[in-house]
Length: 175
Image (spheres, rainbow, N blue to C red):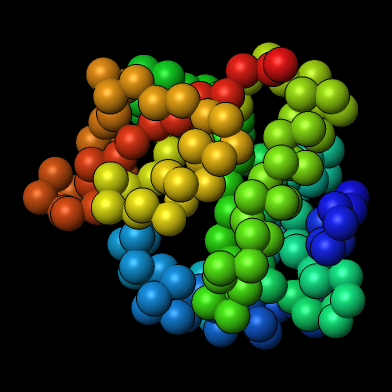
């Protein structure tokens, strides 16, 4: 898949090193429980690719069309942990710091949402993040997603006293 400035594609072996560096960056991982080790990052790539094989969609590797640089991912993931609004397909993104502030996240998210509705046939998608992650919430709003504060939740995979536990939930329905 492509956008004006990005190529959204399956993962390549060459993506693993920059992906691991991105996942080890404390600033990139600020709203996650911890940065990932190289092994954890590589295991995530395996899970992403497995979901492509099983569902036809997952988290696409993002490449800047002009330079060929790998900058992160954007895509769709079936979420099934224990929460009242699940199972549901989540749209998500993670970009290297060097890619922040260029509008890449919203550009790729718009294309992923289009895929969700027009090609995957989904009726709606969700997105969630830690309450403190204002940058991602801004992308969600620019994508046209809406939030009902009554649906915000404590993430069941995080301890209740973890400051990242409180999550906001956004939704987008098929146009």
